[in-house]
Every structure is written in structure tokens, then in C-alpha cells.
Length: 104
Image 1 (tube, rainbow, N blue to C red):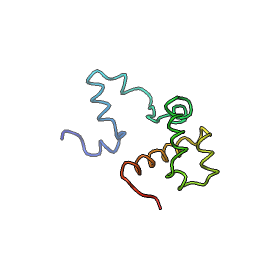
Image 2: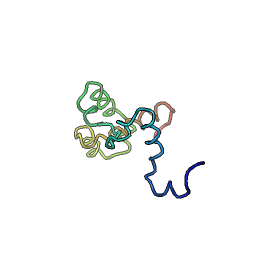
Image 3: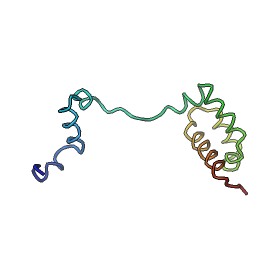
Image 4: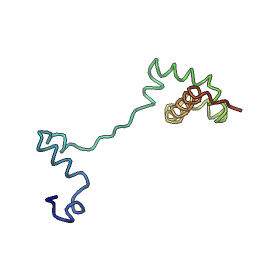
């Protein structure tokens, strides 16, 4: 309520949060550079035992086989740069199983 009108427009959208964080002893966090929250799906999916087990399960998935061409499906199973579509197919596979959806 004590802010001057237009103050929000002139400064970055998160300045209020940064000021609050700084005043609570978190200046080091408020001043650090932006970091992403992305998950490296390719390293996990193609490089760990658990990920490889999921790829083996995906290989048997009727859902995945019904949605993509055999050629692209084989690429998804073997090429790390296609981890995102692989994870999307896995999520869809599990959703279909959990909800009892029948494929025609």
C-alpha cells in the first residue's frame, strides 16, 4: 500500500521478492544468476539402470507402438536427443494403463 504508483512497472517483476529475500538474510540467493530447473532426461533415461528398464518397458508398449511409426519408435529407443518424446510416450503409456483406456 505504501508503494508509489508505477513502481511495479519501472522495476523488474520480481524485485519485491528479491528485496524480501535479501532482508531475510538471503542476499546471496537474490543476487545469483538465473539457473534452469530442467531435468536431463537423456542422461537419466539412457544412462541409468532404471532408465534403461523404462526404455525396455516402452519397447513393449502397445500405446507407443500405435502412436508413432516403427522407424521413429526405434530412434526414440536408441537416440539420446529424443529423450523428451520417449518420456512423453512413457507418461502416456502409464496414464493409459492407470485409466484402463482401450486402444482400438
